[in-house]
Image (cartoon, rainbow over all chains, first blue to last red; front, side, top):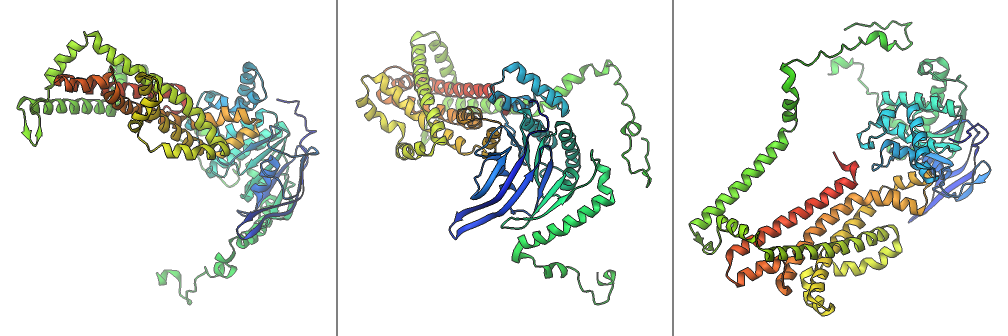
Length: 288
Length: 299
């Protein structure tokens, strides 16, 4: 791994607009978004589906160019994907033809590191993630949680300045997800790397982050920026604390509003209120 | 089993060690258990064994029907009057296996297949990979291959004879054409199905064009390439036999056709079975190579 002290990994997104052309003209996906992640900070972006949070992450990764605005990492404009910005995808995206260790070694191989040092580095990292006995398995054989641990370890192996995660635990079951969140905070705590984390899970965002950006429905803009003053290291028991629940309540109402907007004409506020059935004074048991 | 009651103040996670009893070491194997492993092996492979047995039975039934059809010289619209019996074919096969001329036929056919098929693979796989990767190459070559593809390799025989200086080359060319298109189309198909997320993942890990091609596109398309090779091998045999029958001297296809002209009916069946076995063996060989180079597809 690189010298890896916390001096690097500043992400600055300024006045970011993204629109694309369709048959009906130009469609605005993201409008005037500014986001900052300080070196060593853990920042989440949360918002309803289709708000452009993944678009923003893809722009930081270098897969998309902004229509307007700038994306900079450590002062340099992002001009394409690079090993400086590690990324973890929701679909795991492990190479099925490589073993667990082969996957983790990939980035180092691209860097031209020799076989033995690659092997040693991969073994160390896999050990940290509790995966050493699976190093010769093909990804096919692993559970979702293990796959994503390999995905994270693979992204960290090249010693990137920042780590970008695109709903990495979205495909996992609730129990596994909580464990993975714990593993991720532990790793982050140890590596002191800047993290930009995209999710639609409110608990996840609060539990992991120092700061949370909340985005609006399409076109995506930043609606609010919430500081998370919970102490580190984070423990699952904190999720029951009054501080956590207050943050949760606040974010929930922000998101709910946007989710309803995102669903547009499909479900208005009235429709949700209509869910309480008028029983004309009878009790439910009588009606049934 | 110990029971744990969660009390209100016990919000902290319970220590796992106190809940789970230590697992007792398994008792040493006794005499009764001596055959446990073979028995378990049998239980685990019951289906495979069943498949084998059923396959053998089905072949036996086929041979029996053949035997009786020829023994009683059945003649109900379909005529088995001159069809050799399995016994005659076996007898002829034993004689043929001591005959170097027969082996010369087989060896020549195998040689033609090998050259034609290998040339096709060497041209079609890289072409398919390049066409799959670069739109410009794909869109300029695809129309030509699409027009040529539906033409059966046998229809190329007259053209091939005109094109090549000798019969030998034109037969190899027909074999080449037969296997070329299945390999190309499957390679293209495999390239089209490469998961773009894997490409992006490799870019985030610092892969550049050549590495992406070698480390992502190629292995991702490999299972489809092998499908193409298997299909291509089958078509190569079809084309080869047809070409040998039409324009050949020597070769197992020629052997089969010649047997008819020379009224050696046992040889017809022998040639056919030989072609079947060779086709089967070459497909199995490709599957074996596929499993060897793609260990991640083994189940």
